[in-house]
Image (cartoon, rainbow over all chains, first blue to last red; front, side, top):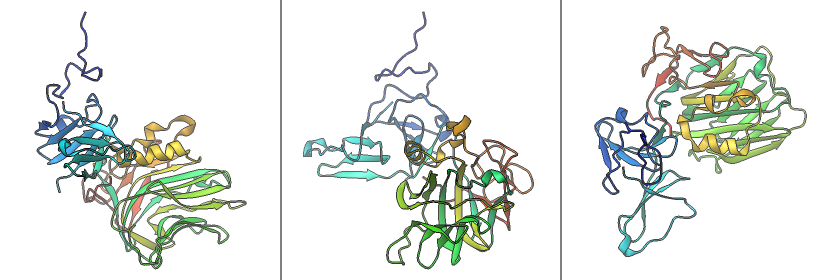
Amino acid sequence: MFVLPTFGLGVIASPLSVFDSSLTFPTIQVFDNESEFIDQTDAPNYTIVHAKNTDRLYVWKGYTWVVYNQN
Amino acid sequence: MSTLTSTTSTTRPTLGAGDVGKSYFETDSNKVLVWDGAGWNEWNPDLTLGPGFQNNLTAALDGTNDYLSIPASTDFDFGTGDFSFTFWMRVTSRETYGGLFSRASSYRLKFQAADHIMNLAMTGLDSAIITYNPGGTNTSLLNSWHHIMIVRNGTTLKGYVDNVEYGSQSLTTQSFSASGSTFKWGDNLGQAIGGQLDEIAIFDRGLTSAERIEIYNNGASFDIGSSYTGADAPLAFYRCGDDDDDTDSGGGSVDNGDTIGTIKNVVNPGTHDMSQVNGATYSNANSPV
């Protein structure tokens, strides 16, 4: 039987998730482009990532990405 | 993936000198916090982006005569019934009695230049103060994004700025109807506001406290049109350039700077769709939080 992998917090992840479960804060995942993750909904709450094409930080809040511009 | 520990503004811990670098996400303010050994360094959010529901564009008004227009409809004649308006605004200029919205003189939300009062004027010279910046010279509501809600529940009319209640009035016989009048956004009997409007929703019911909190806390990338359905659905919801069916003045797809063609009412396209008058454009500048 195929079992979906789960993250540490028990969240069921898609086998095709773009989010790297091997990283632990303060090492955060860096994407080349925002478009690689912005439409994904399987990140655990408060996952923090960076996109190089926008120079922004992103925190997933369950239903939306909270975005921080580089000042 | 790397996740932040969550906290809230009322439960934010006080850490010690050995906790340098500990980081939190504050769920009520959306701030990222990093402890520097003596205090918190804070990062304020700049915007939110919902998956598949992004907010990149707004409706931009020139402050001279631009406005947005919804054809007259009795659907917006609320009479003595409940209603709610929610929208985001970034006002940069106003004429003396610049209008955020109006249906002729029957009901209109003014944002007055001289004293910074925002008030809802009704038929019969009644008016309700929605907000007031003490001192008359305080311009804190200018040049930045703010969320405005006007809610009538029964005999109580309340106004909110960024979900803080600023005004309340007990209503008796005041009627909010304007048969045959175009619904204008960014205009009050010819007096304009300059700046941007976005995510305009009109309900023929009074929003609950929980709904107000949900709408405000979800920011300007919240799918109001899909979140409230059936009897709870808004009469209209306008994304001001971000709906796939919004068009430019040539009938084509929307780009930043285009003159507005049609802003679709996403909950019922083709009914109560919005257009522009005098050259209002789509703008991706100064994205709302």
